[in-house]
Length: 312
Length: 312
Image (cartoon, rainbow over all chains, first blue to last red; front, side):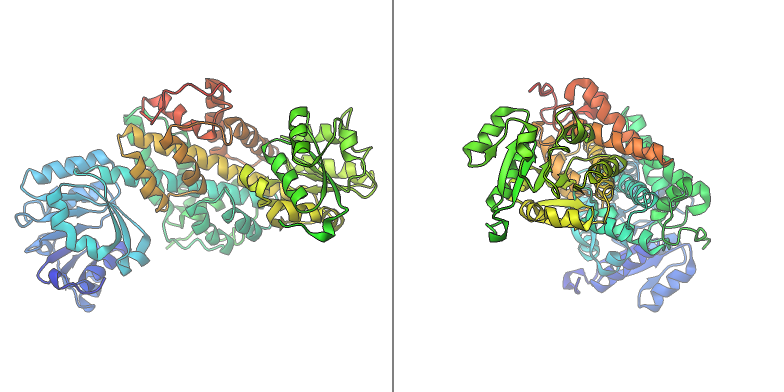
């Protein structure tokens, strides 16, 4: 996004400067917003300041004077703590400000957080993100958003700065979260299926590079097969997205489905494999480590499969 | 494929003139081969004759004088019957002729059939197909082939006529079959995942057209989600590929995996859903009928979901 003159004067705060949040803060700054960054790790705040942003040492300081607060924390519990915990910002936000929540969570919790914040006269935009750190840094995320027209209007400068595509999915919080959970259901099952398939091919002694070539050109292809299997072929399980992410997200799907009396046998099977991978010491490794798990369980030989789980 | 002067004189037989075999026979004829069609249903043989092909009333007649026999039957049992059953053609094939086997089957059976045929001085090409009836009719299939150099050489005019892409995957039967099973593993799991997801979205009251738009542009996408979910959105379960195909193919994968001591939890979960759909009367309906099964099991409302199972 190029600098937009209309953004001058918009003040934003980014809560959580991890690989996604840092890039999103950079994108907003590049688009002309006045951005303050906050993270519990002070070193990343200093890095953001070194790149010309503002930094805050406390949550309340970060949101003072901000029209838009973008929360890029890990889950619902952290989101609730940011808003309503002991240091929570709900009471410190400026009148009319909007809280843009990007964590993946159960839609019911998103609805509840929105109701509590709206009761204080503030806005909540349910805005899960998709796209990874590289797209975050380039301002090219996909955002699956829902909320009141007022929440969208207030968040617009930040949305335009962060995203190549903003889906406007409804006028209440929870809908964006529900769309994100459908995506995570599919993504999590597809990674598990890709790993079940590639290690089965290895068990049969097939040429795995050729399997990748044939499958990516066939009806068995998925976005995740195409994206993750190269990690397996390279024997490189450096975490781009970790096993624990899908332990969390398929766990949310399973809990939602149980509450709604909806059976999810594929999610349940995939979740067990992510749990087994985590239990076997690969929780912080790349989610394609499921292929190593299948190999360990079957004696299949993968490129570099005897590499130790990542201890970083 | 246009008429190729070098093909004049090549005589081929196609065993099984179903939606795939009929199109493959047409493509070979169009490419200049002299093609005889055979099917247990005499009416489709007559249709092929009406379009200018030759017809045979008995298996042995079909292969008389043929250099290439393309078998387009349903499974391993039918393939074995065509070759070695009471009316089997193995003893009737011309010396040096090649049997091109397109049925999806356990690689171990493909190897065994090839060995038995080669012991008679004949050639066997393991050549599972992918692409559907429309591509069969246009000569644009994908073929996952393996076999001896002699089998490939003998089959070449037919392969060129039938396929847009021939993967040459190895010099022995069984490798092509193994690649096809990896594809079927993924395809079968992805259809089940797509149906689990879309009916879960329906259960939550999401706009399903919007779900399709968002997912096909996101990391949760698969070839099968993109291809099959439009059937669900249209409420049209007219069989393009039936539930029973994946009852068969995931059954083969599960049997192979059990024999090799390889765990396939996702395949196992998906197979149970195909079995349930078949047991509930949808076996001959489109494989996207899994979405109706999930809806029936959860009270989710799908477009046209109350339509009766297809009784055709």
